[in-house]
Structures are given as C-alpha cells and as structure tokens.
Amino acid sequence: MTAASLFPMPDVRLVAGVDEAGRGPLAGPVAVAAVILDASRPIAGLNDSKQLSEAKREALFPLIQERALAWHVTFVEPAEIDRLNILQATLEGMRRAIAALRPLPELVRIDGNLAPKGLDCMAETLVGGDASEPAIMAASILAKVSRDRLMVRLHADFPQYGFAVHKGYPTPAHLRALAEHGPCPHHRHSFAPVRAVLAPR
Image (cartoon, rainbow, N blue to C red; front, side, top):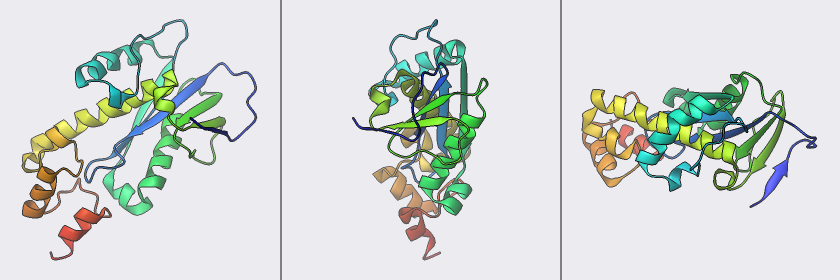
C-alpha cells in the first residue's frame, strides 16, 4: 500500500474516510460516501464492501449510520458524469460528500491516489485504503449499498435492462439489452458501449 499526504499530518481527532461506488457502470450515478467513525462506538465486521456479501453489507449499513459521528452519501448523476468525465465527477462527488459532514473533518482519508482540490481540511490518499482504513471501509459500504438500492428502484421503471441484477455494469446481458432497446435516461452517453449504440440512431 502506498500513501501520499497532501499536507503535513499533525494530530487530528476528526478523521473522515471517503470512497465511491459505481465508476465503471454504463448506467446510474456514481455514489460517494464520507464517514467519520466514533472510536467509542466500534463496528465489528467492517471490510472493503467488495469483500462482503450483500447480506453483510445490508446488515452493516444501518449500524454505520447509527454509530458514526457523521456520514453523508452523494450521487453524481449520469448527465454530470457525461459533462465532466467520470474522474472529475467522482472528485466532485468527494468534495460534496466531505463538505456535507457535520461536524466537519480535520482530515480526510481517500481510497485511491487522487484527492479533490479545494478542500477545507487536510487530505491523505491511500491506495488500497478500503482494505486497511476502517472509516474508508465504512464509506465503501455506504456508497455501495446506497447505489445498489437506487439501481433496484430504477429497475422498476426500466425492467428491460436488468439493473436490479447487474447494477448498470457492462455485463453481456446488459449489453444485449442496450443493443435491443437503446439507452434509457439513466445511461451514460459518454461511455463507449452506449456511444456505439447511439451512433446508428
């Protein structure tokens, strides 16, 4: 694991973990969560959301909301992803999620190697942080569960795409549905498989 500090790291008490879910899908928003854990109220079983079963993520979701000092989940919608590109949209989601925390953190630890600019606190990036930093693990769970639940709701309006199953990722079934039905309002037009379907139309 590597870490890159953007600022000197004095002793801090309010540390937020930040992570996202949904950078790779062809449809739906990218979800970004920020969480400040409460050391006096530990949460057993935290892990990278990708390493947890759906049932475990769902069980941890309300515990994180109940026991954290602060948490926030924000969605960056497909139209904004298309306008900004997925990297900049993710960074913008991080800015919004961090800014919405109350109390505001003194330090944010972000999974990956990039941090948004213009934050009002110190920032640290951690490659593999979702497997090592509990606050990032908690954020990854909130982002993943929030986004998955949204995709299930979108499935009710657009069942032909199978969003409840693949959550917008480019599975063979999703690509077949996209070719047959064309994109819906929740598809990311800037992503190549969607662009390819739009071109002949």
